[in-house]
Length: 408
Ligand code: PLP
Image 1 (cartoon, rainbow, N blue to C red):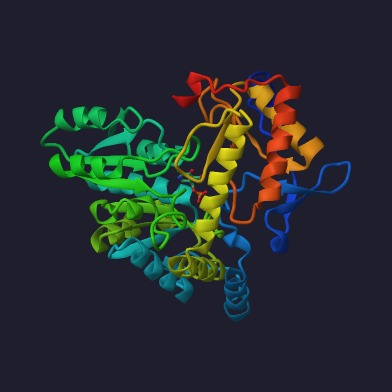
Image 2 (cartoon, rainbow, N blue to C red):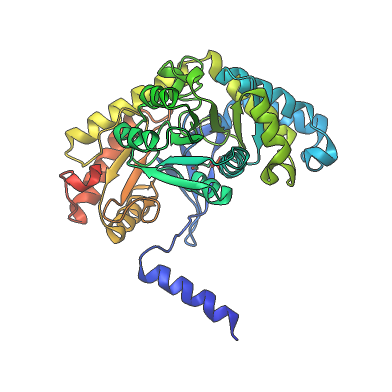
């Protein structure tokens, strides 16, 4: 058998379905956020990044870089093994304390990514609850879906953000243990969950709640704890999961909750037990970012002001953005080929990088450019982006009207 042919055929299928992903090579410039150097075969070019999840530019904050380099010099880079083998390095202990405090919980547990924290956290928690029924929002992230799948327990899907649909499922199983899974902020549409209403239902029907705050931590709430903190609902959620890789600018993921829950996941989750712990310098860097954003509102305020101005400027130009109350600005295209073409033209002709978002990340027909302004995109850059987008929209003959399908 020619095994390689099988791989080539699978790639051809992706190309045929216009799902083949192309990653550009890029080097961000720490001192010049949001600029980066793009490295195509024709030679390097300076471009503006408009789609990074380093939402607040914390990856290059002087305090964060200093914490990383100082810890690396003191302790070295790697953790030296799993926590079972090599012990828990002090920067991890400090970071878990910081995270528990951030979310007002008794304890926190670190994982090597937000993806792993969902996969390992959800699967382990659900398996430890006898006869557990999982109720999962239909737009939950792939890492949550994998956690559900790995748990092997029964799951039912509720229509996105529809509390009546959730209540219907809860009421049908009054005496069974139930685990409700949802995100606080959905990163593709930029909409938020009705957190307090979900918690009310959880309390009424005696269900546990697990909330992914990956896109909200650092960004919302007086200390950057996320959307639940902003809504005054943090104490009502049993498990809050987050990442250190987006607004905190580093790498790693975590869950926070009661001491016994966290200890049980620590003791049972293979995705925690059998992998090398996070590098201590990264943990120190994340702690520095979290501490900074607990007291500094400057980055959040600037980011929100830029997002508001960007939305207003794009709407005034007639561009079809999905209305959101959050920092995410989805610009709808509705076709995978045109979405890629728009992204290519922006990069080639305008020095602007916004990656195309196509199926399966979003539903077919809702392909889009997902724009994420940072505190460092100024008015000039926003106006340049508008002009570039109008040019691309006209050249590709794209729709200036927001199609109703975009809002589903
Ligand atoms: N949860 C959600 C909702 C996400 O969008 C992502 C990644 O984008 C993750 C979890 C995974 O987080 P990480 O990038 O830290 O692995």
